[in-house]
Amino acid sequence: MPSNGSSSGAAVWAILRKECRSEWRTRYGLNAALLFAITTLTSVSFAVGRLTDRVDLLSALLWVVLLFAALASMSHAFVREVEGHTLTLLRLVASPTAIALGKLLFNLVFLAVIESVAVPLYLVLMGAPPPRWGAFLALLGLGSVALACATTLVGAVIAQTRGRGALFAGVALPLLLPVLAASVSGMRSQWAGGPITAEARLLAAYAVALFGVSLLLYDHLWED
Amino acid sequence: MTVALETPMVSTAAVFEARDLAHRYGRRVAIEPVSFTVSAPAVAAVTGPNGSGKTTLLKIAAGLLRPGRGTCALAVAGRDVPPAERRRWVGYAGPAISFYEELSVAENLTFVAETRGLESPATLVAVALERVGLVSRAADRVAALSSGMVQRLRLAFALLHRPPVLLLDEPGSHLDDEGRAMLARLVERERRAGLVLIATNDEREWRLAEQRIELRGRGLGHPA
Figure (cartoon, rainbow over the protein chains, first blue to last red):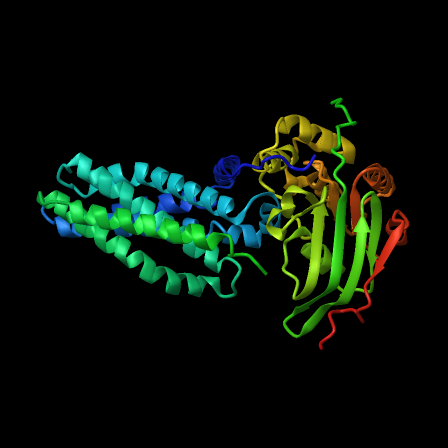
């Protein structure tokens, strides 16, 4: 049978489910990310106590914790395929775009799981004032999407290079800085009672731009 | 488990045509210029000394690698198949294929079937495992398989979507006598309507073919 209409949607969904199953079985990134988030928040809480009146520090701390907790695993989404020698198998069954979209969705799910544990813990341990939930969740969501788009793109680009660890930092930094700056600024603004429209728009536009660039690039990534 | 072995195979005449095909890895010559045409139904053996480019030739044929020079065209049912679409028409089994060790044999193949968007993945997986004699190990994790069983799994991976073209890179490696008999039966069956290219230096394997493509390189990827 000449393989069917190998629909991209089916491929993306299958890759997402495979990623979730593999992560659940190996706990490759989940345990380390949760450990980082919990120990960091606990340590800061012991060291400086509650930061109720320091919304600038609260905003920065939230994104630093989320970024570093998730980064190691998210940036390795493709590296694991290269080091496990499974990238050839993937390339033989799905288009590079479908592979990358599956990985991107997995990174979003991964980030959501980390946030579901880290954010409530952060709000309690840091003594954060009650957030404006709509603005808070919108910023968290948009920042997460932009973060996932950036790390997935960089992870895909550097996966087959030598010295990818050093490369990741160099390539990811300029892409992540706008995400962090807008996310921190927006979060501070929502706690200060100000508008978050500008930051939200910036994050949304940035995520869309990264996603668009990714779609253009992915099909040419692994051509030898 | 009993499954129907005689799954319908679509008769889609495939033709491989290489014209002045050559490839280098940096300064190393991987394939000296070679030209050939193979039309289904046929089994062709690609032979040559170590480093003469047998694996590289099959990777180019599978669309995994872009040739440095010349062309390697595949036509199925009279339609040219560009490299990016070959995964739909080609089944590839070679040492470059690794599987997800944290998943079971059946889970790996089901993932492949779902990613390809095949209908009835469970049935296709059962049929493929039956054909390579791996049904009894379907539930075992890949990490627990011997190298001979992994080789059978590679063959099942190549057969899963019942492609009209099979590219087999040293398909008998690690197989026992029963495994080699299974391989001979498999090649014999595919010969009836499909096109099989076997890269090998093993006499037991190239004797399965009625055509031979001899790569002329001096071997070991000699420098220019």
